[in-house]
Amino acid sequence: MALEKDRSGWHPRTVAVRGGQTRTLFQETAEPLFLTSGYAYETAEEAEARFKGAEGFIYSRYGNPTIAMFEARMAAFEGAAAARATASGMAAVTASLLCYLRHGDHVIAARAMFGSCRYVIEEVLARFGIAHTLIDGEDIAQWEAALRPETRMFFLETPANPTLSIVDLRAVANLAKRAGAKVIVDNAFATPALQRPMEFGADIVVHSSTKYIDGQGRALGGVVLCDEEFLDRHLQIFLRHTGPSMSPFNAWLHLKSLETLELRMAAHCANADAVADFLAAQRGVARVLYPFHRGHPQAALARSQMSGGGGVVAFEIEGGKAEAFRFVNALKLIDISNNLGDAKSLITHPATTTHQRLQPEARAALGIGDGMLRLSVGLEDVRDLCDDIAQAIAHI
Image 1 (cartoon, one colour):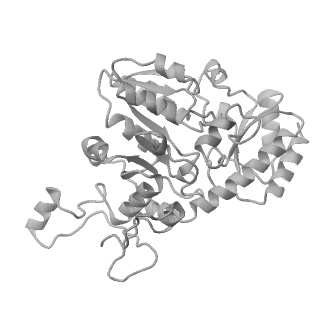
Image 2: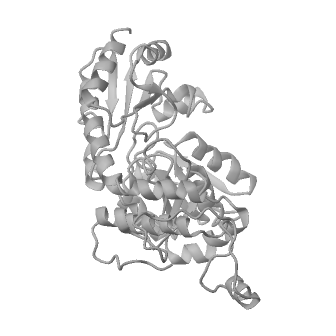
Image 3: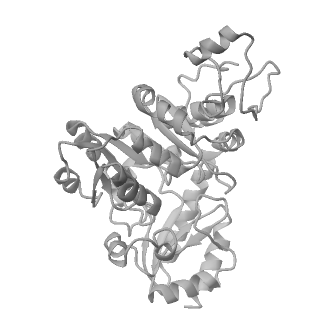
């Protein structure tokens, strides 16, 4: 198998459909799915050569033809030199940190992040003697003030989960470059269809491909994107020996989903924008947060580094947890789920689900109130979504 065509000069949508495609001798038009754990060799000498680095596959924990196609397509779409797929988004986050950091190193992270990411930075890294400082990612002065001689990495989400906080990618990347630190950006909410952090100076991009890349709530997956040096010196050997491998079947699903990612994200953005406007006009809704909405305090920054606002809307119901629960329980179309990025609209109460392990004062510092809800706006007809929201609001 070999790359079918030279992808140089292709636009992103074409890359999403054809990037990294390989074909067998059967010349299939759909990418083949290789469900195998191992590979045979013609001779013992060939096996020896593979283990010494010759081209070819050895074991699907190290590499697999279907997974390799997904990785190549993701790298081309994101604008990265290399990509490695993992079993989940959290496996990607953890690998990107632990493959590089050592005892005595220091990480600066924007505190507005997914609860599991915060656990890894606060709890897991600490077990290995890796220090951290959490800061308000929106304030570039706080990034600079947190710098130490031993700072090796910056970690951030933009837009962040669930507050949709926006971080100035170019400003943070410039600061990190001067300090000799690497920047990791979790790009799961925006996807490469809306934002490509490496164009703003990020060194490493991570995704939970479980979310919008899969797009239909079917299969777990993650991706780490980086340059060849980071891959060769740090990431590849870590993944090879620790084994957070993506399954070939999940890679095939996500590979095929990339073909429609731009089209789906455009539809998610259009629906989310309309829902944000609708929510802002409703009684009992204290505030609405959506990156491209006029009520978002960083809308201008979001527009400067994203081509669309994404598919997630956060909003605050007056009356706290009791009224938020009353609203959620009254929904008939929108499902209650802590997942996001599905074709189906999903809603969750972050204070009691994704961010429940944070102390109340920590949630308050992030702006996650007891009345906050996170709505992953799906691909249904937006009129039906707004009707469902309206009838649920009538219950509060």
